[in-house]
Picture 1 (tube, one colour):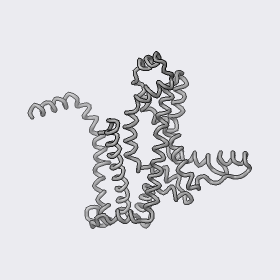
Picture 2: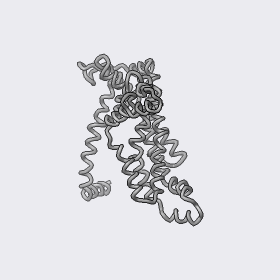
Picture 3: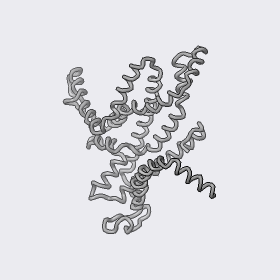
Picture 4: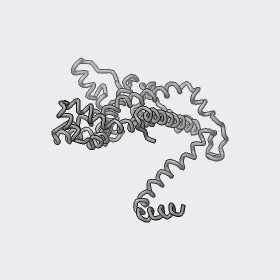
Length: 308
């Protein structure tokens, strides 16, 4: 035990600069991630400002039952799940395909050009992105309306007001914005592939497509699985800002998700029901936790790759 303490002390003295670097991120996590967790108790209380978080009366699972029995529950839950899975299924393979494609390009100039063009949308803010979508798909002044009038001579329907089109606009605009940036980690993983494997495959008669499938793709499978597990863990946490900005009264039937509903009941409607909103948010987080544990367990059993 004494030897262990001495070793730890020596290790700390030897790498003290690294431990100093850790202070700010650790403090950040404690202050902004762990301390606020104490406020989650209001999900089990009838919170009032006069009594405060610690003094409010306990009500058990009352707010969770209210949400589960609410007529809004089915709609917001199904919208959240549907949009999340659509985003995951459509968006997850595209960065992999892009990375494999870029890795196969021989021209470095062309490769860098494509990388730059695909990375750039990632740096556009959500507000600007929604503004671009609004401008492009405006039925009167947008590119969509102009082309429709030129081709068919009629003004098209308002896509933003169409509940069925909301999820497609949301998902594919997100893919356009982030596919290039998301491909970086796969390109980095592909850089570790031994070139001798490709040379050996060439000698055996494998063409480029076969080498991509049997060498490059196999090399990034562990990375893809880890990212899939992490993405599954936040499947219920769709970005609030973009959905809220794209939302209007006409598409509300498909655009109302848990995070926007929490905002409305927590801060807007009737002065704010903080306990109810916290209960919904906690319910959301518990589902995310269950999903990430399940997917991690399945992945560990099937592919022997997991987060823990």
